[in-house]
Amino acid sequence: MSKIQEGDIVARKSYGNDVFFKVTSIRRGDDGLDYAVLKGLDIRLFASSLVDDLVKIDPKEVAEYWTKTLKNNAEVMDRVMKRRMEERKDRLKRCTDGLCSMGRSKDGDRSEGSEIEGFDVPGSVLHLDGDKDYLDLCMTTYRNLSIPAFGYAVDEKEQPKKVLALLEKHYPDILVLTGHDGLIKGAKDLKDVNNYHNSKYFIEAVKIARSFEKSRDDLVIFAGACQSCYEAILSAGANFASSPKRVLIHAFDPVFVVEKISYTSIHDPIAIRDIIKSTITGFDGIGGIETRGKHRLGVPRTEY
Image (cartoon, rainbow, N blue to C red; front, side, top):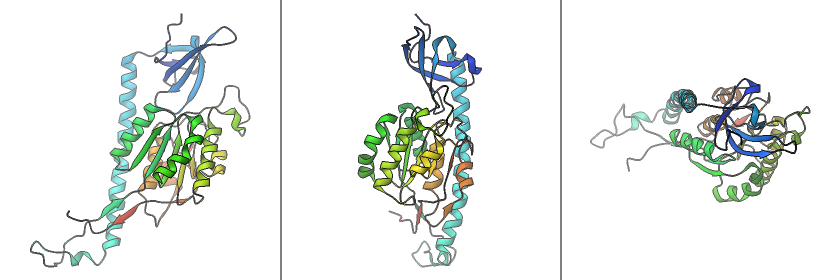
């Protein structure tokens, strides 16, 4: 009986223990050997491995790993919020230029120097995730970033079957289709979607979403996970996808792509470099096409 069990946090010895995984299941292969199905602890990678190639990670080391990961995530969020505040200040000034002197004083009279406050109407998100744990992390991050979001844990294979009904239910500005992916071991033709664990399901779901809304500005789509077939996902109709260099992407990368879209003005096309700069993985893991923002600034803010 193998010491490695379902639910254990492990690493692969043959890869130098570079990535931490959670064991989702163990099966006996036709060769009589035990294989484990793995999902990345904080990256969107799906893989399988011989149980004998796995080493169990000490809980203390796992805790340290999560502490470092969440610290990095918090640093990215801090940069996002600082950037957002600066951009909002500039936009509010443009929207109210010449009107600030028309504010009211405490006694109700209009007076110079009174500032008009604005309010945000960010783009809304529908997020389908093949991993419930990742979905929970992403939904928490959406809340912390004040992004209205609807989240569903939907297995990658089921996303093409369920995406249309969920789009009709929520009519979001932004759609995220993600979960786990990865190249099948031994695959050489990187253009063949059958050489990926889940790329074909992301592609099919994107095509169905595009049949619902053809405009890439009216419905912005991010799709993919680790090592996904980037070109095919974009060709299916996505605005942004992973993974140009077939590298691993972080669990939070889709959220930081969405944040930039959700909080960029509807009047402004988003520089692709600015979106990718917001992610943890960068250009090797995320790419896309020119897209307009989904944010609307309202004035004035009511005191009620």
